View 1 (tube, protein in one colour):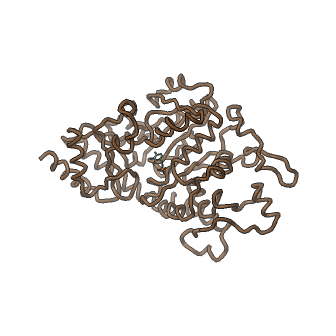
View 2 (cartoon, rainbow, N blue to C red):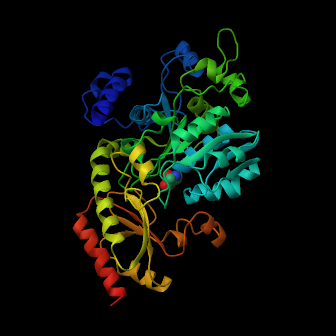
View 3 (cartoon, rainbow, N blue to C red):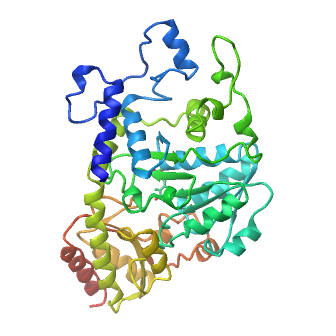
Length: 435
Ligand SMILES: *Cc1c(COP(=O)(O)O)cnc(C)c1O
């Protein structure tokens, strides 16, 4: 199903845009070009008024990047997507676009370290404040934390590094009751394991740097939308403003994003405002690499999930392990939610508590041979990292406590190696430390 969908979409796109001689190439062509030749002045007028399909300038759109956008939108059941230069650009442009001019975002303590830092240090300077409700699945408490100027609920579907699974249907119902969208960072789950849109999310964010691409060789992000959120409900006046750039060239009449692109007002607005003016554009070559990575998404994730389950079960029985936080284990408080939302598996990233001193845990990391020690996740290689000192190292000890990141936490991201080899490597490292 997944791959059928992917290739069907690619063929459609290429039939529309590619010169006939390119249509035979198996891989998507890399349009390594800054700009595009307009057919004539009428074509240029139509392109700039967004009434004709086509490409303006690679900062704003590009045929190779366009294939990536359409494929990810298709995989997630969204109406449209926009690809950006990083997952952080996807998050930042989304937050800025939602709370433009000031407002609040309701979120949880369980977020990617970069999101935590940006929410704390940068967004308040733009008069955008992030409220963190301690328990993201306590809907009554969340409702009390909503304020009149809260513009969205923002969660990670499966959180980093603790595997907190968000109850998206309950969160979507709450958000919609208050006329605001549910935004879900679905980086860890990927569209293969979970489609947040099917559970009520309005906007889905990816860091394609991680599992979506899966080869640790690029930085990229995406924003996907449903096209169904009522942006004209009074809470988002920015969507009701008419725009000079959207004017009808013959009459001069200015239009709103909703009028011009009713199926994709959110990503079109990001494209023409934030991407156009702030400029975090994804290059065509990186889009091409991400497209190659996505071709094998289902196979990679299936193996990674199976490896994660085996390693988590082994660790849970290990005497040098204090706890294992993996929603795929029956011991996880999120096991029931994982069964509901992630029936194909609870992802391949989880954490465990090292039983011993910090010095011993560092000796353990230094004794590891097969796993790679770095901060990426979702790679084809298996990765290990001490999150409190690295990915979440910018947080104070109190903030780490609030986010449930104890000093002995070690995060694993399962790759494609043989699970017996991965377990043997952890075992030899434990034995070296506790000899
Ligand atoms: C890595 C990550 C991001 C940021 O993505 P970049 O591509 O590194 O900018 C955002 N959210 C989650 C959950 C991530 O893991």
